[in-house]
Length: 455
Ligand code: 5AD
Ligand code: SF4
Image 1 (cartoon, rainbow, N blue to C red):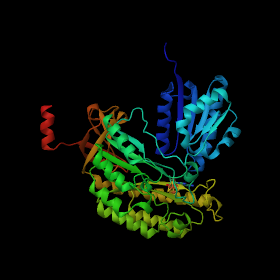
Image 2: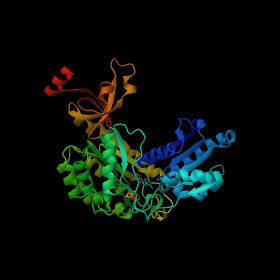
Image 3: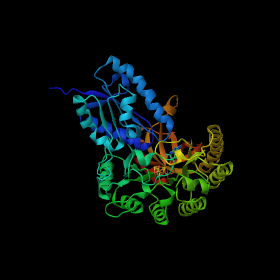
Image 4: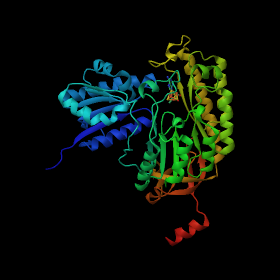
């Protein structure tokens, strides 16, 4: 008898962790007779996998769910659920506020999804948003078509309690996956053709394995004991970025990418104290010097919050001067958004939204120019590019097909080439730079030229 499939549509927003969580949901659901569809109109099951780090994404869940209400009127069997951090944060409230919603679940309950759906056959509504703090973090990687570069979760949750941040409340306590599981997962991905992994966690350098390995040891083990070609990781906390880690990064530089995302959040020591970031401006700058010394040419990236409660004009100037001094090639800047449960939401000296917006605009304008100038250092350089895919956009109307891939500094490089290059690391001379996207031409050394001729 032919198997009957149901259709599932997942709408994802938020960080890479959420994107990876959605992939896990799809994988689990495929094992339970669901198939992915491109449009919500085609679905028997719709999941909104949400983010609650700032307030805007929470509003988005409500407005998006509103759009699906119409679909439910047409198809009574349609099930709608909200997962991710909004599911965790709002739990049953969401079921009350949005009457046509069938279920909610948190990031810790993804593996329960098949059971939740079964329960829905018996019950009208299901809320599955319990933390699993006490249990060890045993999951295996689940990704359907990993391609050339993919993500691997190494930790979940966070114990840092930065006073602006909702993550410790939505993703729970820090748990690390066992080192041997990560080695096995990454070897498995290599066997499926993966060349690059990005290790994911809210604070990867708090990694603390059951066998006593810290993040530096994890990187060293993955570099030595697996055949993966490149390793990236995000996000790092400056407090845990120490000399031991930097030494490992420098030693295994061919595998560990020259790109470090090190969120500073603010350039003012006083604001950092009130954020509970546990480092000062000077300590952060010392770490940046240590990194630059050990890894010359490293590309640095950061997150910054503008308008944190109590941030004065002088505090903001400190952020501007720090950004200037560090020279970030990539920056994610946000306006402070008060979040439920967090300490900073109760601070009395909230900054006027207009002031926060002005500061954010000033910072972004400055960064745009700085990133543009910093990118010029790559002009005429030859970069090692791991080709990820055909570049359909720039191939359109071009004489030859184009491909795109990343340099170790996380620059997206576009150049002439065909599908056979996907998965290969090739040398590309940069002919045109912008902050993120570069154009280039492939170059060959004499040995490679010889091989090209004979193949
Ligand atoms: N308001 C604004 N930005 C925030 N972030 C986290 N919480 C908030 C908030 N309440 C930003 C931080 C963090 C990034 C992922 O999101 O800069 O590093
Ligand atoms: Fe949030 Fe701070 Fe943890 Fe990052 S380190 S997830 S900002 S609490």
